[in-house]
Image 1: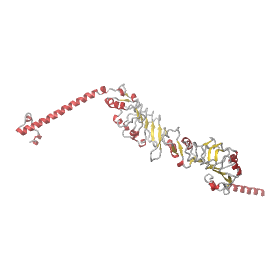
Image 2 (image 1 turned 180 degrees about the vertical axis):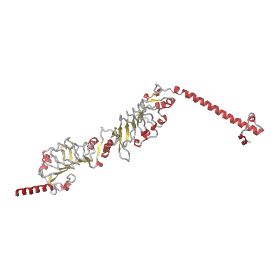
Image 3 (image 1 turned 45 degrees about the vertical axis):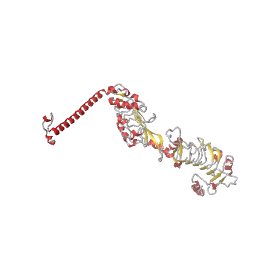
Image 4 (image 1 turned 135 degrees about the vertical axis):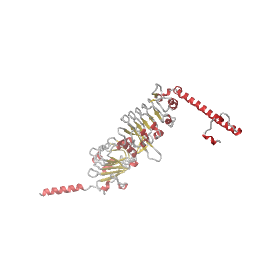
Length: 474
């Protein structure tokens, strides 16, 4: 019975000891970060020391390639004696975390800051229990590919103020806080991969930027991209129209405004009967080719105000008249309406389009539409077409529906012959009427003058019967 009670008491003492934290929790703020004052005395031969105010914690300072291992050994660090370590002002060509001294320690908090380290080599052991790793302010330029992959307990990683171009690989799952701020050479393509993970929370987003990559053509207007702008990329896909795909197109930089991504939306072959409404915010490119769309009336919707590129080939569109008065007609760069059901193209609408001299700016595709050709087509539209052929690149593919001839081959003298003869006749009639009116005014004036001077009306005015209105003259 006594032995049983003693066992219960020892178990209680052991459980209570486990419940009492070994260290002061205030020591482990910011992943165990100590000020320069905590360093060993400058005259001390050993550049590492264990702290008296924080149990199982140590600080090393002024470490270099020559004294690195000796400094750790003289500190008499063991797996039981140290679980938090801060190394300040380390000057190393390479931080090799595969060395036996790192595997011997069972660190939970590992901090190496304010030094000069070119690269991180090796990899943490599979049994590592590091949960907080701070390697900030060292100028680190490279991590070996698998350096951090075995840190399964990692919950905080600070790589700020270095020269990294890529986010190193780390554990594949579980929530984690990540600080990669102030790495001016960081590539956006690498940051984007980290952003795709929902379990990562970025620290200091306002000072986190990335450098554009040649693989991403939508970074064509600036070199430095903010993290908030990259996050916008994730939102683009969620805002996309059903059965369509949305991708970033470019980054617009406007003085005095925050940079914004424009969206390219692809709805080709989506079996649509009308243009999609609404478009995602800042959509400037829309591809609705190979559908059954019959009208462009949705272009007047407010969500189309930023649209510049519209590809609507191989549809059932019958008229371009809904384009009149839309912002698209003033802003567009490309309008492609090939192989539709357009019968009439209103020249007055096209005449308001301001084309530029360069071929690469603002153009239309209208080919494979069969128009109803008449005198107006030959006299007006054909002339407009030939004067803008640099911008209407498929102008030779416009045909007439009521005759087997291309629009650019229409003969105005033949199509407008009947109308010209009728016009000439009308002019003759008007001329005769004007002459008769002038003669009538002259005869009335002469009769009035004769009546006033001689007192009688000349013939034939004297033979005309009196009218009810004659009393006005009398």
